[in-house]
Length: 256
Length: 269
Ligand SMILES: Nc1ncnc2c1ncn2[C@@H]1O[C@H](COP(=O)(O)OP(=O)(O)OP(=O)(O)O)[C@@H](O)[C@H]1O
Ligand SMILES: [Mg+2]
Image 1 (tube, each protein chain N blue to C red):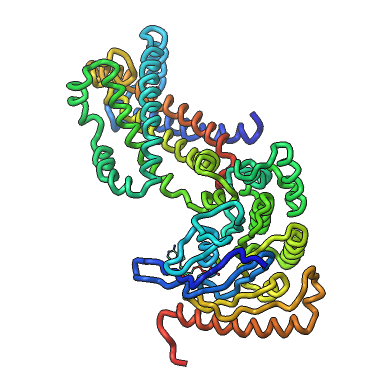
Image 2: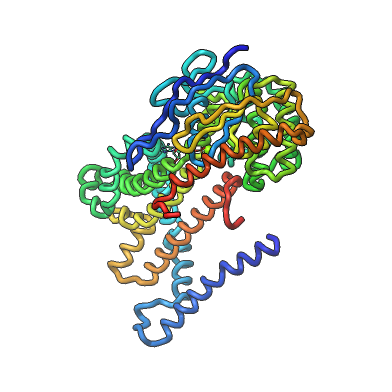
């Protein structure tokens, strides 16, 4: 890492240190019953214990895999659908109310139906995550695609591009940024929906872990679960941001 | 002399939320092979709209626009267009932008030839040092030159240029004008150029079409009495000055008419 990198890393660390200090402060202030707030070091110890004795990695893996497949499938469908809706205005007028209707439904409210139709296995969880990713992704896609200006297509036409060339050389490059944004939004929504999806008879997974812990009032386990979800979501988002920066070097950004 | 393009009693109106907007009205003129037509008129009068009918992006409401005897059905590589908004592709580097047209099937340029053509136009437009930069790093004038290079590179017989030198400083502008004259001399193109500069119109064009305030009608078509090849010395000639003040008067008239149109309430003078 170069000097600037070290500094940026240090700056990024400050709020975390602040949050932990605040956490201790709240505990020691006496306003809250300390048995309701495990200390950061206790949570850390629990983390190590879960990691070494209870197979925390299996939970992490189970959840990450669900999110990964849910988002992948959701985006795989959201990209062409969102593209068509963004590209053909009549299609949008036609489908817009329906998409907004379904998007407004919280996935958790659908769980009873999902259980009826898809059972209680992996498939049911995948359906919930797919649902959440698809509807969040499709909106980002079509909003973005509908804002592509016709100017670049016109330029390509006057240079002699045929329909396939316009699609390959103009429309795809202009769509990539929106696909990446859709992916990031869907990933965020999917992690947020994960706990709900694991309400469906999950054995393993961070959401399942949190729910099991809540029945036995194991606050430290709940804290570990929440922090793990946040961290993994953060790491995935950072990776996506790196990829985005790589693919979109051409974009005009306020900050390099 | 063969007629390349023809405006035949062309009118165009846009349907807007506020009602019908007549933008071009009863325009007729021919553009012959080798002509250099300059169109001049106040801002917002309908020049770009007129050009885009010939480019193939807009259809006349009545009348017809012909190219090589056929009604224009859509855009095509034989009619190169330099857009007022440049339209350089932000996701491609400068060199890739110039190469874009050369990689298209319609233009039949062998892969080995593309590099040579790109380098040629990079040099001509003073963009060699930026060959691998993205457009976000270019100034407005450089983007404009890039758009010009990209259009020239596919060698269209007919060039439609919408204020192509508008964003350039006086020196670069005059370089670009001379370069255009040179390219025309060697490649024998037909040009339709929209400009706001009377001097530019006289210096470059063989005929000047002065259009009225919106809706654009033909105010007058003026033949420019200078033979090609031309150089800057013609700008010192007395005929040049006379023509300039004559056209400036016409344009000023229409400019005032357009201003009056755009003023929401009329002031008592
Ligand atoms: N697609 C459109 N729909 C509705 N109105 C339009 C459309 N395109 C242009 N106009 C209107 O037509 C008029 C003429 O526009 P145009 O772009 O042809 O002007 P112009 O002569 O090129 O102006 P400038 O010199 O400023 O470029 C303007 O009032 C503009 O608002
Ligand atoms: Mg214009």
